[in-house]
Image 1 (tube, one colour):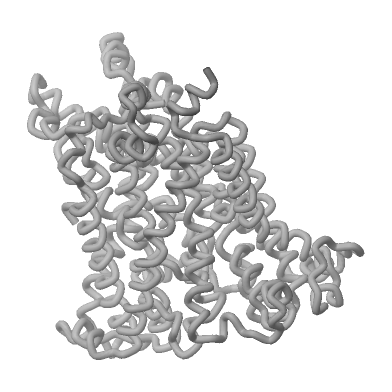
Image 2 (cartoon, rainbow over the protein chains, first blue to last red; image 1 turned 60 degrees about the horizontal axis):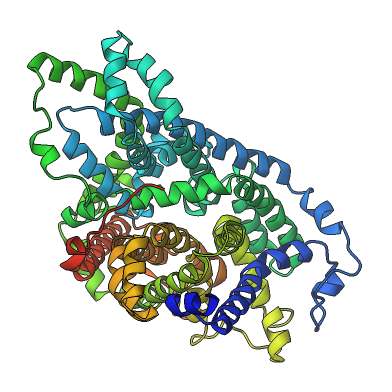
Length: 281
Length: 323
């Protein structure tokens, strides 16, 4: 029976074992940079500059972190959280409203608008930074975290994703609500929103991670030390003290740990969202 | 542009557009249009204000001679565009970008397809473990990943030289190796999303077709090429396009690892745009390059769409179902 089954699917047990071993080796290679960041942050200067690698910090030290917090690292972390949470909330609110309208309403300009959204998504957003920077200067938002938040919210991927999710809400229920005299906003918040909640969750985590890691936009918009994000902080530390790898790894740990934790906790939503965004074009 | 839209919207029922308003009275259409725009208003504010408007300005600027001193701005016609073809730094950046895309896109796609095929039938825990591991470099953030690689590549206390016993070799300072180091790191930070997508797509392949083929004696390879491959084709297409866009935009890696050097060997269009803005303050030229980069990406996406869209896509009975 077993032999017949494995013949049917065309895989021998040997092949499976080999695949699994290769996968595990690859997994270790992919995890290694993160491991090296974290362990590196606990190594002292002598260990880091030694000619032979120390695979695990035998004499762990906190001196890198002490040095790191002489920089305004907490401020950078706070800025990053503020920016990511701000982008997340605004994106989820505006995109779920817009996605619902695009999916369920029939109106003039719908086709044009949707085409525009899809085209904008395919363009490299770095291209628009110069006009964007001038716009922010004009709005007196230069060196302000909002200069990063506003373009992130404007990026139409969220609307696209929420449209995909909203399409799954059954039109009959919406019509029934209308017949019962439910107002537009009430229909949205009491019927549609609960139904697309998994989608909103996916978009929230997606926006949070993307905004946290959007180095280019931060680099252009935030030049003053006190408004830096943690990514900018590490990048600058690396430029200023390129040989103090312990300190840089401490900064990288501080940047990576919160976001990696968020990702692992909400992993399910995240993968769902990515798959939905593409699969249900 | 048209194709780009079609790529993502290919499964939008076509007839919907024509009969959008069928069975609706004029008053209802008006009412629906007003309420729809009220729903869209917050989103449109951000989208038009901080994406569409800057894009238009960007195109306008590309026809101007423009620097830090805005009073010296003059009309340039196509001068900025013509200059690109005579600018050796731009041409070198163009070929480096092409090299990155041509190497990274097929390897990322093929590798992620292999990993996904291997893991999609495993039990849920193992599957999400591997999916998570391969996604981690994306989440960790380009900057954190880049600085640790910079340390590992370091000539004196870097791990790679310690392992290969080649202390003193400068991976990033060598014209032959630098760009390959960047491609390698780009690879590790790019395969996360394709794996998630492929695992979902392979899980959606019609199981009864596979079983029927197996009963008829199809080999594993035949099952893959004749049944699974056509059904995951739209996903492949999407992955090709997002990976292409990503590779074109590769910036942080280059800025932090090599700053385009040594001797321009890792400078890409994206990096040169940045350099033009910050080092040379030539905004008109930078915007013109931005427009060209956007056009190149659009053309690449269109070609991939044309090439990959096989005629038997529909014949394969391909249909996406929700999971």
